[in-house]
Image (cartoon, rainbow, N blue to C red; front, side, top):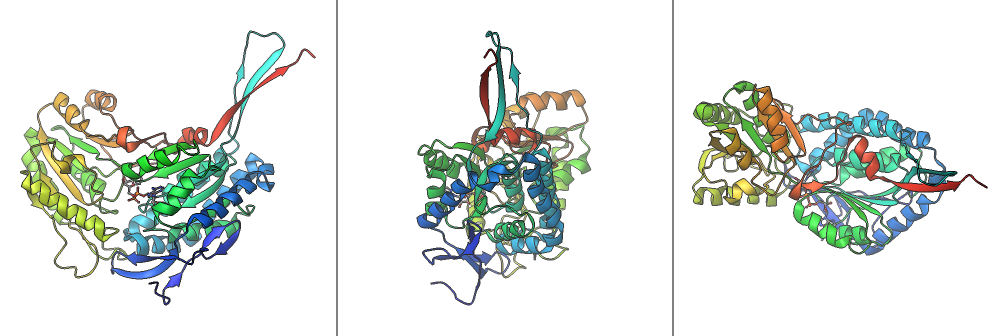
Length: 487
Ligand code: NAD
């Protein structure tokens, strides 16, 4: 039953805000209070068909006449508007997902920076010319839009994850349908509203549907008129997406999860390594980050001292109300996430892991889906907790003796998204950047990012790259032209 007293949001299809045709709704629950605070449309197949039809028609409408410079201006106008709306956007993100407010506000700047970058990239598309064996024949390529893009977004960092999809999609001249996670849809509905107000884009170019993975996401990603699916989420959902796109042969960008290694050698700056590991796996997003550094390997000579410093730093973190500037860690996004962490910790203890801190919901917080920063020492790297992405504030740590051994351990999961190396030996750092299989690597730092630097992974962490120049090529295709100049 839907609660009529809750605020309702609408979806945006073909330039109109409207209710779902089915009049079905999804309640969004605030993870800090455990109370439903709003409802978003639960879009079904008919709404998806409307949105795709709008995006197809917009592809061949006035949008096709927008020059690359004009398309770039759409994005820069949005980027310039974000700071004025950052408080509201962050408030919505925190209410839906429980993300820490300070982290969310920081991500607004990041998100604006990505929209600005892609706005500036819109007129930088280049083709190639070729010398062929045929006299008098001029041969060259130019790039054209891929078509209708479905942007399927998870609940963590939805605005930034939108900027790295919608940015290159619009810069490249495509039209777009955004499908947010059912857990965190309102910030994306709000940014589409801002875009509609400031960016002056034709109807149907940007549409947004909210709803469940199935049917809404499934019908959208398998729709015959969708040409590209840009997906961020878990590996299991990615496998569904790949099966869905067998129907339309849409191109896919897949940015998935991780189980990223943090490797600390005995010559590292210990305080710097502790700080980066704490920030990398706990602070801000409570471990709900694709690049969370959730496996730490520490060289045996400094292992005991390092673990003791790390435990002290984890215990000093302030867990609580995500809206308070004092809090460093908020709640997890759903009760299911809490239960997942609890079960994983309990199984790990059964498999011989040693709990050094955390492992439970904090006793002092009576409401909200909070979980303490948790550190477990392990000896066996094959146990589940060392192999599975938990998406929570849980770190496993184990000692190692030499570089060869730690490279083997670092590469011993199905993931390959990120890695952190802490050493003052430059040669060793360079060797690790080649031998560890991870698409994003940091040396003596962690979680830095910027619009011009590509992100992406290997294996179960996905394929393709988002961000940077490479992303522009993911959203346009070369067309090869042969001109006979002899007549
Ligand atoms: P999820 O895979 O459950 O959902 C992601 C999106 O897919 C949601 O919008 C969901 O509704 C939709 N979906 C679900 N089933 C679908 C189906 N059958 N067809 C089409 N769409 C469907 O992910 P989540 O739990 O929201 O987010 C957490 C995951 O995202 C983690 O694995 C995390 O590591 C990953 N992530 C990766 C990155 C990255 O850049 N690599 C960034 C952030 C999050």
